[in-house]
Image 1: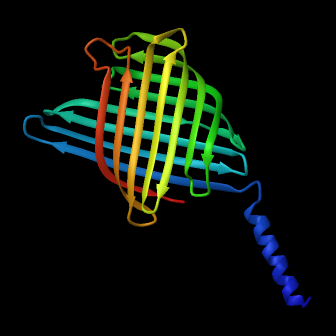
Image 2 (image 1 turned 90 degrees about the vertical axis):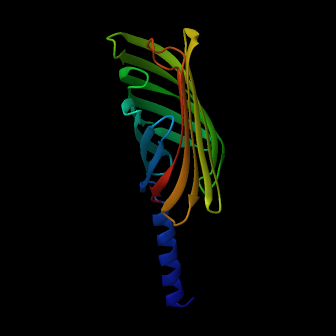
Image 3 (image 1 turned 180 degrees about the horizontal axis):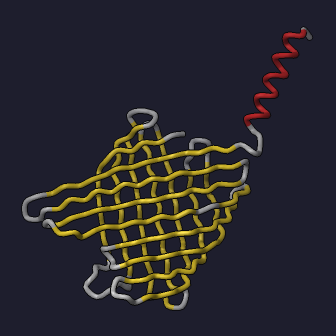
Length: 240
């Protein structure tokens, strides 16, 4: 075999080996800004921004970090000022996932000064592919401390069942996550969260999005709503 062909084969093999090194680190970012404005019978303004950074290390480790902030006024009065942050590092092997979670939340809407969550548990990916499409479920056991605006506090253990769907075809993509979190000692005390984002991508990095969020909490302070629904439209920026 000519020397040039041997050299080309060696360079190709080295490139493939380097691309598959187990110590490779990949960072992915996605930012979303949505808003809503209505006037007339009810004057309402709502702005929401969501950011996520995912760190992928080697062949088996990942660490998604997510944060969101919402600000809403109704008839010139502050109604919503919501902040949520969570990190969910995980280990995967085939379809199996092992998750950890750390979360922090503040909510004017539900009268929460501070909420802290720590937990861990298993998960299973029913379907994944090279395009990032995914159908998965996980069930984490979390310890949660909530400090309310009236000075009361509550510390409970919860089961956190999560269903996740990520689908894309052409310029359209759908990302949907649903949480069901009952108190492990009293299943009448539970929380449901649902977030869905439908995106129309018009460049590799920018997309127009429709964002739907729903939150229900069975136990809230007196005078606070148990549920909240928002539907907003905005733009998203992402890297791959």
